Image (cartoon, rainbow, N blue to C red; front, side, top):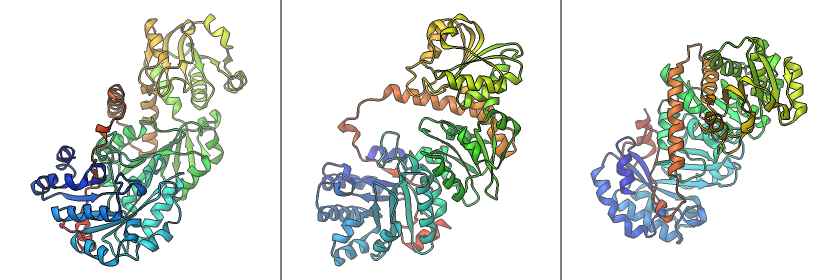
Length: 522
C-alpha cells in the first residue's frame, strides 16, 4: 500500500486507503505513520468496510470503528463509515468519531439505482462532513437519475455520488459537474475496488476530468457491447489537441429506448453509433444526409440545441479513403463479407466510386437484399473460392475480441488486398492467414481512424488531427496487447490495499468541513 501510494502522491495527493484489504488492519496501521508524516500535503481517507457492506473486514461495527479511530490518531484526515454501521452506533460514539476526524457517511447499493431520495433522507439525519451515495447502473438512464439527485442536494450538503458498473461511466465523469465533490479511480488497471471503476490516469488523461465543467459538451459511442472500443481514447485526444471543451464517453446501451432517453436528458451533443443500432437509429432521426438515407444506416448523430437528431454516415469515408490511398477504385473487384451497417456503407460507397462490388453473407437472404438495394452482385459462399479480387473486406465482427475466429477460409483469400475492419485485436486469424499468403493487409485501425476523423469534423467544424488520432489508438492497442500478454491468474498477492484517486479539487485543511471544501473549490 505504501509503495503504491508513494508512486501516486505527487500527481494525486488525495487518496483512499482500503484498510479492510489488510488481513490485520490494527497491526498494519502504525506502519503508515511515516508516509503520513512525509506527505503533509496529502489528504487521505481511511476506509475499513465490513464484509456485509461489500468490504473485506470480517469483524463487528466496534472493530471497524476502532480501526478508524486509530487511523484518525495517526493523522488520517477523513474516514468513511457505511450507513449501516452508523445506524448501529450509539450517538455518543458517532459524535466522538466526528469530533476527531472528518466523516464521510456512505451507502452502497450493489444491485440497482433506486430510492435515492429515501435513502438520503435517512442518512442526512446524522451529521457528517460528506454524504456519499453509490448505486449500480443497470441502464444508461440510471446515470441521469444519479446526476439529478446530486443537483438537487449538492447546494445544501457536500455530496459524493456515482453509479457503479460498466454503464455507470457517465456518472463517474460527469457527476463532478452535477455536484459530486470528488470521484474515485483505481490506482492501476487490475486494482479496481468497485465494479466499473476506471483508473485515475484514465479519468485525467482520457476523460480530462480536471477540465470538465458546465460548458463541457458531451459526446459518446453507443452500442452493445462497447467494452473494447477505443473511440474514447481517440476522440478525447482529438478534443484535447484542438482545444475543444468536450468529453467523449463509452455508452453501453442495452436498448435503443434507454439510449434515446439518456440523450434527451443529459443532453448529449453527438453520438457515434455502433452495433447493433446503426440501422434501427435511422427511424429516430429528424433528418439525415442523402447518403445516410440511401444506405439506410447511420453511425454519426448530431443533437441540436432543440433536441432534434440529425444523422450522417462516416463509415463510407472510413472504407473508401484507405483504399483510395492504395489503388484506383474504378473497375476494381471488391468482395464484401457481411451485410450489416458497415457492409452497407462499404457497398454503396464503393459502388459510387465505380468499383465492381460483390456481397457474400452467412445469411443469404440478407446478403441478397443488400446486393439488390446497392445494385451490386451477390456471391454464394461456395463460389467465393472460385473468384479472385483486388480487395476483400471483412465487414463482420468475426474475429473481434480474441481474434481466434475467421469469416473466411484460407482457400477463399484470392486477393491483392485484405481489409479487415476488425481493429481489436490488431491482428486476427484472418489477417494472419492473409499475411502468410503474401496478401497486403490493410488494418481495421485505418478505417476506425478515418471514420472518426470525419465525425470529429462534423461535430467540431475543425480539421481532424488524423496523425494524432492514429498515434494514440496505435499506442492504446500496443498497451492492451502487452497487458493481455502479461496477465496472470489472480492470486492473494494482488489483494493489496488500493489507494483510489479523485479529481484535482480537494479539501485543503487537515479536517475538511463544508466551509473549507467550498473555499478549496473556489
